[in-house]
Length: 409
Ligand code: SAH
Ligand code: SF4
Picture: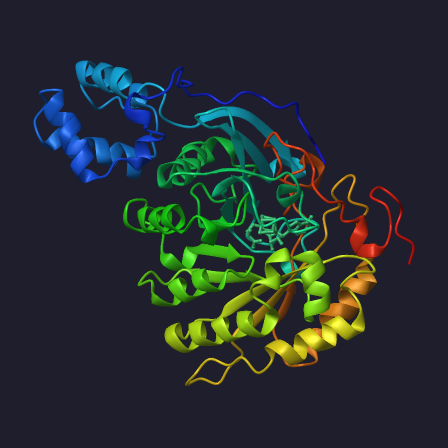
């Protein structure tokens, strides 16, 4: 694995706080853009040009919008100074197939986004052939996360603030604009094919920005709804809203355990929305949308990787069916745990993962195993944790060990 030193990203960093507290140019809608053009004494079509720069060309810095007249660019630069993400760091892993970006936010916090390229034939080391021919960006919706899942680095570092819609969208714009340059091989896609809301934060705890961003990515950036996936830890009101939302994005539910006693220990939200209520909400979602749902399961050695949990998971999810077709509505996505230093949790052996997969599959459910991408640059699932703060409870509690101890099997 090649890991060149982090290098700064190009792009003018906004220096000061934006006038009016604007966090991102992507927080501006058509009416705001029209007002800006009018204020600058420009004809109305300049607002449409500006929208094209933002959404079609993914240009987040006014100074780089070269088809706008210099005086308008200068006006925008001055008027919007301080708004926007500050590209602070870029790390490369998996021989150039994985990239992690650190973006500074107004107020001093920061968030991370992870770009994963998948070649047409599957990436080396990918289980199950990988997701072929894709460029997937994993984006954050919050600085930190208030859900406090005991195995998750982001959750252990606490919550700072919600991102605005524009701050969510701007992660996509800034990475998209670099994609041609970052392609690790000619076979890798030169544009983003997928966006997943699986970075820092719980998307449904920030529903306005999450749905606002999903719509903008669809309407403005031209991504199809099926190329967008929102992952939730199981906020039932959020799942209900997803069932009503007319944008047919993919839904992923982080389940991680098939029994309440275990899930209570891993996902504190389970005390509020236990498994039966979560599954009932998903059943309603499937009935309303006729779409399949992906269930994420981070497999942790000695904690939730046993045959009993695999069997219970199969029994829990196999009855979920798509009305009409009768096919399985649940797809299980196993994520071999990415160890977080200090939490004392480990990834299961490859054979344990296969055993778990086979037991779930014996219930007729489709199951896949997600490749561990970006591990060497701490960019794998659940490893994002840039927010200043202090670690919370140690997950060693889960296994009856002290944080940092080896877990014996
Ligand atoms: N808050 C949302 C989305 C972000 S987390 C959610 O929880 O669904 C994205 C996925 O990574 C979730 O399924 C999460 O449980 C999982 N995850 C967290 N920490 C992990 C780790 N260390 N190893 C593997 N997966 C992890
Ligand atoms: Fe938040 Fe998701 Fe991590 Fe839980 S797993 S703490 S919901 S980011």
